[in-house]
Length: 499
Image (cartoon, rainbow, N blue to C red):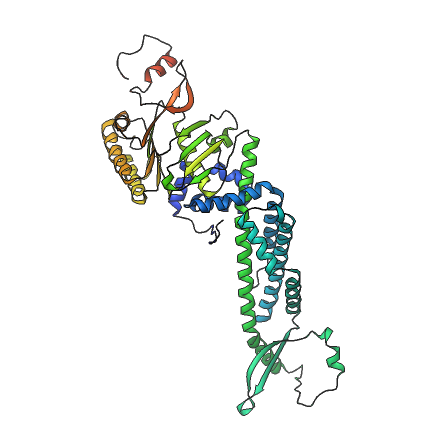
């Protein structure tokens, strides 16, 4: 997933931050669609969305080129994932045994399986080599060709076979002071099957020591001598086997991400939802556009009737979304967060077209349930989370605020949010506020600044919600009168003042 760094699914941020981001942006259904029931893909997809968004456009383009090859050859990439997974699933645990001979045997078995799995990966890539375009897959194919060619594999398998059979152990030494052995060296010996010349050849002069097979003391001493001489070999083979397994696991995890991207695209296509690979630019480009943008999680759960929206917010650092409740504002906000996270990660996004600038971090501030422990009030809890968000903000960050400070009165909530918005705007951070606080919306609407954008949840001429988010200044009504008239069925003319 990166040309110069390994992707580590376990290197996740604080669990509370990760869970909050997943909950606020409704990433659960998206991750489930990517996994399609595979726990490895689920783990990798969650980690990739939470921790691996590329902050540099070049890194995103690197991933997108890989995804393009995967979309062109979906069968091949799925087979690569299956090959690596099968080898890792079949591995046996014996590398921590006490006896060196046992460790050597298990390490040799594990290395044999790893080499076999990587050889199958090499063959799959070779079949499509001429059609591959991404630097990632081309580099992988070249490395496997260089280090796992037929001759190298045959040599490694021959040595591993000898190690598994336990017939490759010879120890040489010299006699030292007091006839004690010195200069012990473990040498690669011939197997008995291929050493018939040695048995038929005339014996050279020298001394031989035969051990009585019934003498337990000598047998114990011989076992201890063998374990001592084989210990360095066993530890070396153990380290090699563990490194090889880690490399294979790394490859499987990165393949899992791209298989997850294909699964998500297939599922959204089955539901009739358009997907695209967005154009990701540098943070200074100020790009933020979406055409036919939908909330992927809502599309995956509702299965039909999802309304698409457009976004044209280039160079807009502050966006305010107002309008009637249940008009699609939160859904729109989630779709923006999903587009940003998924786009920077290198995944497809649920839109007909998209262009965005990379962000250092995506932060969310959504309502939370009442504190059951009554340790703090609702406003105090919101302000504490908002303070945490502000501390993590950078000039290249994105804050998504959904009905923040809505638990207090209009004036107090508007004053708090206005101070926050002013500070973030001056700092250069990007923020989207979904709010029903009219004083706050009106204050931001009064900014004579080209870097702010006012949006509103549209309504049809007869007052129904269209779930479309369109450019528009905030209104001074909560539409409570429309709701009263629809429920009670009594009309009496439009009120003369705001409700």
